Length: 359
Image 1 (tube, rainbow, N blue to C red):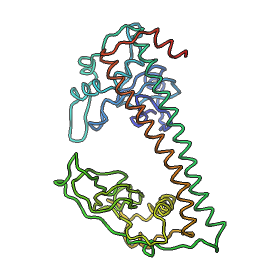
Image 2 (image 1 turned 90 degrees about the vertical axis):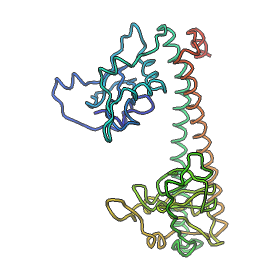
Image 3 (image 1 turned 180 degrees about the horizontal axis):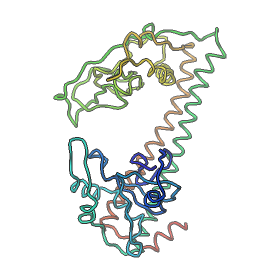
Image 4 (image 1 turned 120 degrees about the vertical axis):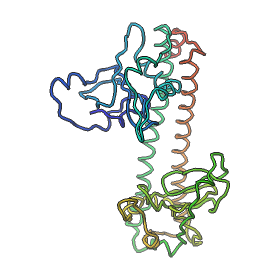
């Protein structure tokens, strides 16, 4: 069964599937086909209208809250339509016709047919636009595959340099210490929403994986390791390269001992992140107690060894960060190109694209 979570970057991702039992009539009606376009008609307002294009169908059906769009292929290229529906203008149009409840938004298929107007471009030009944008898709996909490979290698390096090294050199230069022995674990201060600003000079980290907003004040220096204290991501480890506001659901590791290299400590904690997350208590709003963070144990080798490990892992991390930056640049370029092409501001001659693809 294909659901909303399978609609990723304008395509249908078959990685995660749920299984259902259907009678033959339901199966025939809902079975996916190559070239289908699925549109999410009901969900939270930010997700309603999300689109997925089926490039290669498998034996799968789609959920009832998704709508299948059948395209007249004598007038439009189905992938062109899927690309247009994934763009900014279509998203704004869909959200205008969506009805809102307390926590849900809904797009009525009849209203969608009436108001969602697709630009009429000659069919050869539509296909040319699809071919041109696929060049960016290929670059993005290739870069993201490389990122995944580098991240797998990075996890292997963490195990090899930290976990396996301390096992093979046990009793020599490695020793286990509790965090409170090498640093001061400090809980941040809750920041009132009134002090949040979209253009604030500093980000506010209130637990979670990323910033919760921005503010014009800061309470924690740059180059600080933090551990999320509350919520579903409690135990998540961050390394902050700039000054920031540490919120009430955030632990900062301050006053590191001189014999501890902070990048090494960060990588060691990152490797042990699953163990930190297991410290959580409570069911409604899970959290990690400060006393448990204080007593959390890490393995520390000599300072020179820490520097050596940190240098190797920093270089590997920088490679990943550069590739992520490149992927984001490709996505930004594609969005800009889509806006020009799908609004007709720029026109494409099919023969130009054909020559480009053959080069």
